[in-house]
Structures are given as C-alpha cells and as structure tokens.
Image (spheres, rainbow over the protein chains, first blue to last red):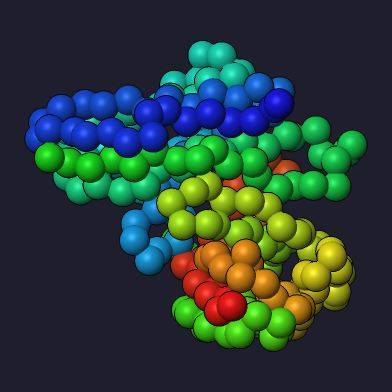
Length: 117
Length: 114
C-alpha cells in the first residue's frame, strides 16, 4: 500500500539535544511538508519542499532544519535552538502533477509526538 | 499565519443529527479543503472545493463556498458516532502556481453521542 510513514511515533528529547524525525513516502509525490500541531491548535507550517534538493521555510522555521536528498524522504531535525519543541509533528505530501489530478489534497503521515524531558 | 478560522470550536450532537461547521478566511483563494483528524492521528483529506465552485457533495458531506463572504461550510448529514473527530479547513492562496502550500485553521471538535 502506498502512503507516508513517520517514525518514531513517540520521541523524547533532553534539553540541548538535537533530534531527527523521519518521514518517508512511496507515493511518488514531489512535494512534502512538515507541520507542527500544539494542543487545541491548528497546523503551522515549518518547512516544505517542492522538489529534490530544494526546500523553503514556512511560518515557524526557526530552530528546525530539513533536507531533501531523495524524493521519498524529508527528515526534520529539531535543534537545541528550538526552545519549545514539545508538540505533535505531522508530515504530508502531495503530487504536483496537477494536470492529471483534480485532487490537490495532502496525504498525511500518522505523526510523531515529541516531548522534552 | 492562520488563514482559516473554524466556527464553532466545539460541537456536540446526537447520532442521526446533522452537523454544520463553518470556516472563514482572509485572502483570495484558489481552493478550500476540509480535513478530518481523529485524536492523536494524522489528517485525512475529505473534500476540495475550487474558488469558482459554490457547492460540492461527497457521500454524507456537503461543502459550500461563498467567496464574496470569504466563508465555507461543511455539513455532515445523518451523523454517526464514528464521525467524532476534529475537522479542519485549509486554504490554498498560492500565487503563480509554485510553492503551493496549504494554511490550516484551528479546527472544530465534533462529538457525536450515541
């Protein structure tokens, strides 16, 4: 089955530590996105990538970094510069072949819950 | 920045009743989408309505869009306990066709009581 896999499901970070969240998709989607969700809040965009080896900052990129070396993978690193990293992180992807698709919708992974300990 | 704002923040109804959720947004859009999120899970795409459409149906879902009022509504008919979830609207306001990204609202928590 095609889809997006996020791992781990739960992650604990110590103060001053960098951690990396994995996002892998086998949907052959060009575009990938990272969102952060806080309790009772909507999703806020951290980074996104429309194509391999290219990515753009979203609304809350400070304290985060990403890479897009392969089409299938878009890992997110939460650095020690992110002072309040406890949140639910969601990865999503989307096809950019819009001529053949009427669906501009995102496919989401099941999320990673990051907690600072 | 938050583009869409859902209303109400929470809605509790009985099974079999209809549920209506509203979304308002601020800028011109290309399309508006509705997503569902079960607790602790990822979001699932429900339906998309383009800026030149006024109404769209999918099963028990009915979405309307009023671009003059910058608002949309999602109607779930004959609700079931399994419809209990948070519902988010998301807008595409991308210009130029590149760097497409969606902006999400804060969501409506729908509880359907058996």
